[in-house]
Length: 308
Image (cartoon, rainbow, N blue to C red; front, side, top):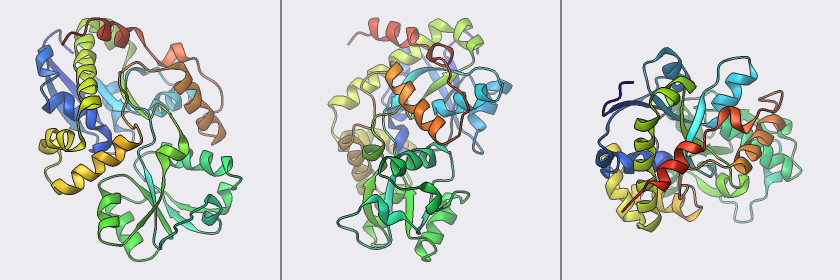
């Protein structure tokens, strides 16, 4: 990264879940900081980590889970410095209406999980255990692409599908699926997505990244006061393929469960909540220090210098 105005940012996949990023870009908040954003989408799961490590991206949006995984297996640190989501962004659909849904209804059933990252599945395991359900007694299909997952669900090859908007909204709208649970509400507050970088980049380009976080924080403040329709309109350039009505409904669904954080400072409590989920699911084998994987000074400084 140069001490200029261009930042290369990579996202794990294109999703309305990451709305604050697109509001920051298309709402002009990062432009107001003198930044030009070159945004790319990772070609495969874990591609954000590869992009940071090989230097093809300066910053990446993704889960703290990626940094936990890397250091737990003896790899280098990737440090998270700006929070985006404070909730699980996935929802559970059933092929049949279940007006009084309870988690034991998953016993002996087949669930198609989101295949793009392990965190949704790990959260599902934590929720099931919390409700006295052994995850081993549920059949999870975890390796399908979004297109294949939808096709399999439509073909009746699973009882449940876990996915995010707009897929959820489209399947509900055409009667294929019936919404039975918000995984965000079921999981509770957890730092699902945030921006990360290598320690070297954070040290070398601190002033530029403060400007980036300040633009993000301004976008988050705007979103906190905006309507779903206003947010969906700003997102339109990044999601032109999504019907406008469905885009608004998806944004409203996320707003109602406080999916997006009001400010970018990551918290120790959230970090520990996620760490418990990862430990409980066997994804990591030992505890890791908050200070090793999170930098709160950048976001605190950005908020302290925010005007307007």
